[in-house]
Length: 399
Image 1 (tube, helix red, strand yellow):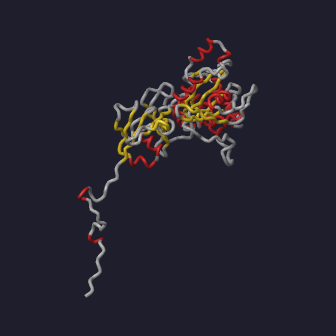
Image 2 (tube, helix red, strand yellow):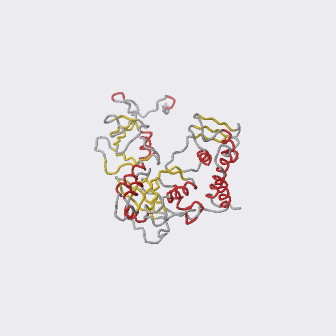
Image 3 (cartoon, helix red, strand yellow):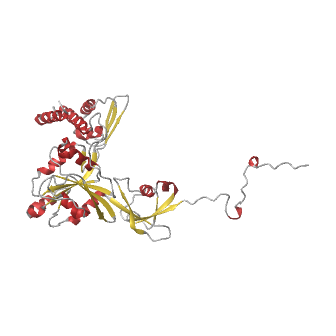
């Protein structure tokens, strides 16, 4: 029996099993088996050399945004309107067959926008180049899920289910669970909060399903079985997602109002160019990019070329700012002067752990090199060795 058949068999068994207190241990074991099989499905076959035929797209700019959606929802048209890059758009499905990149110039930053081929139901199992599309989405900082406002609401659930099946967690944060494998000592189970979805026995059963018999587990929040499985797997990617409903010009105003009020949702129309500026602003907010301007000593700040930082790519502290300029700069920093919203007064003397905010101005004061041999009239100009034993002895006088 292949992996796909085993996955379908387990899903069918979970569907016909009633959810109550008596069956929660059995369902927990089935979820662990299902997660293991899906992980095996994503792994390359044994004996194969190379990673397969993926999309070769080099990372460029200060952030990467991926367009994901069903065929013929307006992804290529949206890319053309935002970036100016031509992506073929036609009235038939699967017009785009490869990944087409474009660059958005917004707020002195460069954001890479990727137009991916449309995915269909079953993409997590490899249908319609679904694995390659989802692999590119995993390397992105933000996912724009483009949906058709005139179609049913089930498309959103189908796409979310396909992405979660391959380890993408949309608009979620990593669970507060500490997990560490050990060589000996058995399983240590501790918790700092009352647990309502999982207990010690169920945790032991899930760990035994993964053949883990020595580990340390600490729950810092009321987590579920799926959260524990995600921590054990360790290959989950937590990414932000914005649901973009296109073609709002063909539906009524009541439907547009209902879609716009859903969480993490935005309504646009590429045909009438409606709400595209709000889409760019929402992308900027979700990515959390921070522009920092440099100021040389005794000169005006340079507002033409900012240093762009983000929490997902390194961090937004003064230390990250120095490392972004040059790795060797950190050891020469004496202190930093900061102007902007992150400073209490202008300028503020800050250390390396100070968090920077958007449009801050930073001046780095470096340590002065110590002068050897004293200063002023105490300065010695001789190059003679300090120790008498190191001095070169003169040749004896001839008599």
